Length: 203
Image (cartoon, rainbow, N blue to C red; front, side, top):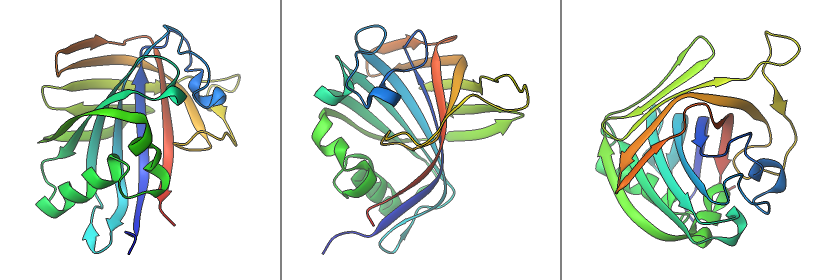
């Protein structure tokens, strides 16, 4: 019997692209601006569950290393789960974020060729004004702010995309973006970022 799961909340992502990530509109067919992709994502789960396991009010972090266009696969990924999660929640989130639960994240099972494992850690995701502040203790330190358009009170948006994360994407820039883990030492300050409301499931 297939697992029933849902995750609703917000995702903030920072990558090494020099300008806004072309993967959003090319759906991973176009080369990243640097020819390869290095990225982290922070997820705030406002409402979520897998079968009877409650996942609401937890935070999750991902780091992903991709050698070329996203659609070609061969991704390397590592997962970080909120230390407040129960052992059942850690197992459920690992199943979702490795694609084994199918649905919205099912493509990760196909695209990720090397999984670096899952770690629990203190993880915070908060909003200060328009800026999203995300941290995995001693691993990720990020601050991402939307880019405003002609109307300074509104962010630049991409609507109705086929992007797997979400159809509506807030174009953003990293104010601060450091990663130190698994032999990686990344700094993406001033580079591409995005913010998305997520509504994922296998329904």
